[in-house]
Amino acid sequence: MAVAPDGSIFYCLGTANKIGQILSPSVAGDKLNVREFPIPTINSFPEGITVAPDGIVWFTEQRSGKIARLDPKDGVFSEYPTPTVNSGPVGITVGPDNNIWFTEAYANKIGVLDPNNPETIKEFRIPTLVSAPIYITSGPDGGLWYVGVRSHKLGRIDPRSFEFVEYPTMTRQAGPTSVITGPDGALWLSELAVDKIARFDVSARRFTDEIPVESKRMAPGRVQACLSMAPTAISGSQRCLAIRSADSIPRPKRFMSFKRQAQPRYRWLIPDPRIRPKTFIRRPTCS
Image 1 (tube, one colour):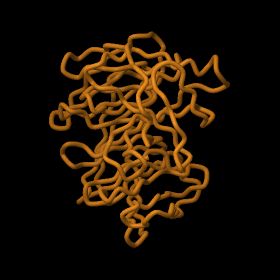
Image 2 (cartoon, one colour; image 1 turned 180 degrees about the vertical axis):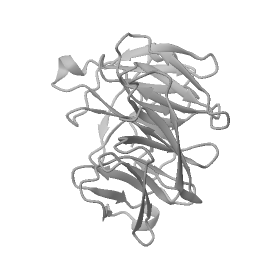
Image 3 (spheres, one colour; image 1 turned 90 degrees about the vertical axis):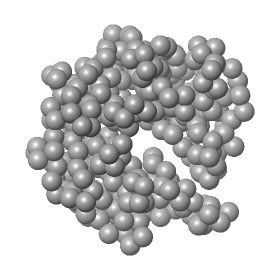
Image 4 (cartoon, helix red, strand yellow; image 1 turned 30 degrees about the vertical axis):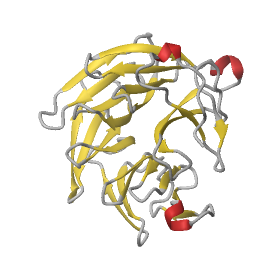
């Protein structure tokens, strides 16, 4: 999911081959108003999505190997093939340079394009072979941070020098799949293979904590790749950590209370950043 400047939420419908939009209450009022935009390329499988400051939606097409642009005002799509064929683009984000950065899981590369010249795409090969980069986020330090599900590392690429630095996860073979920047200025990762949420201190350049989710014991399916920042009840400004299990059912256990919203999403409140993650206490749910 991605939040637009007007408070609308955009999301990918992979097998349906559509982009969905939940209109902001400031636009739709009290009613839940959902729009869907069919993607021109058949079976493109939209995966990652982000919204630029100008309200333009950018997303990855994993199966078609394209980066796509959607103007929600008129519903017009533009699609741009990556230089590497069958690159498998997955994660995407707006960088500190206002360029669009994305991962190429099959090509083992990080890509970038200028929204003003989207036909020209640059690609940078990740140092670790078979890293399989999945999701990517813009960090508080001005770098682009990504996770390698097969390298079991958190990586950083500098948007100016294009230099890479990588950090192994605390638990070996953790299989990190998603990364976000939290309100505490740290990076938060989902670790698919070991059912944990990890915290990385950007200033100290080290992992500080891993938090068990225990989804394997509670139900079939594990903590999924989806970690996202979303406003409370769509229109609020309070930042929440959204976690989804692989079978789309929330499996909270130790550290965060949850409440089902009007929409089929489950959100947990991130504790005060001064509280160490291992001492999370129950707090009011996002409502």
